Length: 136
Image (cartoon, rainbow, N blue to C red; front, side, top):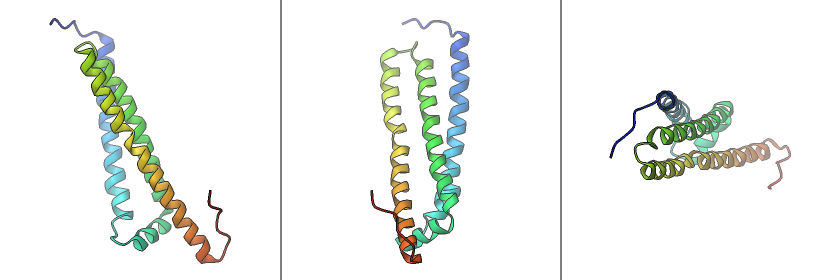
């Protein structure tokens, strides 16, 4: 099997893939170890809810970071597919499908965290004596 010469477009996409990989790795490390480790480290649910209420902006920043991470994974998936397609088209497609399945997991985590934030805020509203938001 003869592999063609690497053209300038592939080099550019490979650079984008490398920069995206470094950026998404930095984002996920920052979100998981700087934000989530502080807020979700308590072993009891009441302590976690207290941390979320005390640092709601930080919790929302963690959600936004996970969404940015998921978007970065999609860019990385596309760049790697374009880079590896000339080597083996079928293998590049399989790798893209598996990477897409992996990239779909952070949004599911975001919906779970958004639901826990909504339940925590409902408890806060009821405790304060104000009107609780309606369940949808």
